[in-house]
Image (cartoon, rainbow, N blue to C red; front, side, top):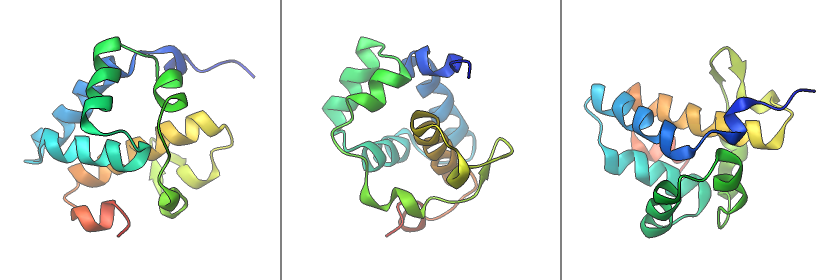
Length: 116
């Protein structure tokens, strides 16, 4: 199977799109950061370092301190793909993040997004 281009794309290149999507719906960069940190285990400084270093999505997730144990609760469709059925582990992590940002932009409460 061909390698997905997104794996090599710098996370820093997509991060502004996540923030813009949220801000267009009156949500904040802080909420986006909170979601990313919840999912990956990065603290704010670690997230900022990943962005500054322009690491690829592959490196971003490989260096993540710890994926949240509730990631299995992230379900639904994003970009026409059911996230719980994605077979490639890296692509699934990317889709989880996309799904969480979509939920934020759709106005879901933070407690529901973070599966609390």
